[in-house]
Image 1 (cartoon, one colour):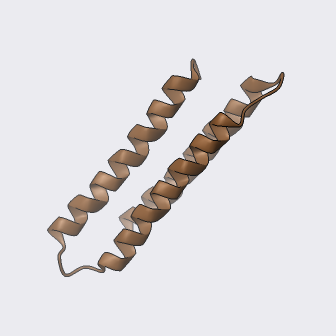
Image 2 (cartoon, rainbow, N blue to C red):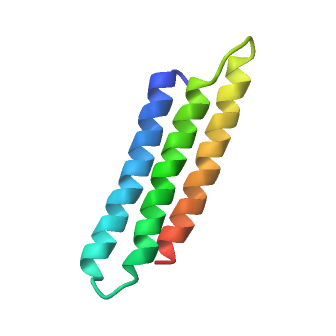
Length: 88
């Protein structure tokens, strides 16, 4: 990852796009289970907050390895959220 700023932008973009997709789904499916979709939005926001906290907590000598772990976590979280979104 070239920079912390870029990683934060990618996280923001990924989570923002997911939330936007959920809201579009809600608008196009007014009879759908909106409770599930709202719960998924809350989960996405919490995932965003957790990832940002992880980034801000990086300290020490081995920052590169820490950011690689954060990137792995980001991919894992996004995969999980996308699966849940597809199941709506």
